[in-house]
Length: 107
Image (cartoon, rainbow, N blue to C red; front, side, top):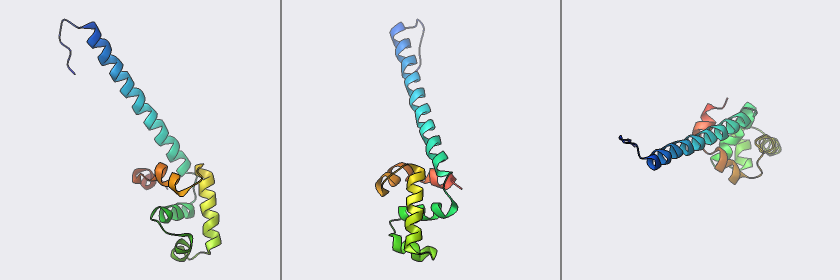
């Protein structure tokens, strides 16, 4: 929004306030993305593999077959990644980590 002279004080305050609100919102989003990425970085390579397959909708048995593991091992990886990411359901995993940009940047 362009401001012309003479400056309308109310318009100036509204413009600055809007810009500050937008800046704060973006800062909060960046901070949340950083926190999510930091948690993702705590996962092992195998936990990343299991997570990716879970997010594709595969069951523990299907994941076990794909990765040539036992179903119990997959369950253990699943439990570990839920604990490390501080989540308790697949729905929450998809909601928080469903964005490919976060997963693609993870090791």
